Length: 227
Image (cartoon, rainbow, N blue to C red):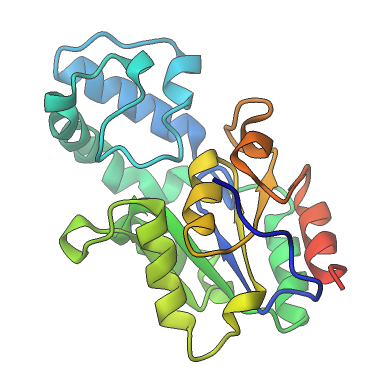
């Protein structure tokens, strides 16, 4: 699966992933996931294995390398949320250069939103109630009770919320993992991949990202100079 090429004009809106794209959340997620595995009596893999869990939704199961039986998925998620949720906002630190990039996009009049696989209440705790909230017109995360399980579900919900205000053909997704690319492609959107997240080498290109950038400054320049 792959997304469209980038639009020929600057985007009508930009949808951002959260963990690994806007915020450096890796250390906190890895630490609390390791704690959760230990709490439920499962082996705790090394850091490189656990960091692969940063980004993709866990509700349908963890990567096989983590060693969580499918039937124990929600037990691990529950143990994780018991410690992580209260600390989430303090553990999600914007990457260096992100706020400058958002300032540039806002100055150019580009609407911005967050589409994340993180639970919706945590997304709002981090973004809406945090320093990044002033740039984001819409923040939507995963919420199984609302029918939002996959990244595609979340992207679709954001697009539905913004539809009256933006031209769909010009919307661009920005993310750091393969599921960001696939979730955007499900709605015909192109994705700009960012290399500062947790993707393995070549992951974003293989998933179909239109381009991969190395710094937030490069991202802003690409978006604003797309025409």
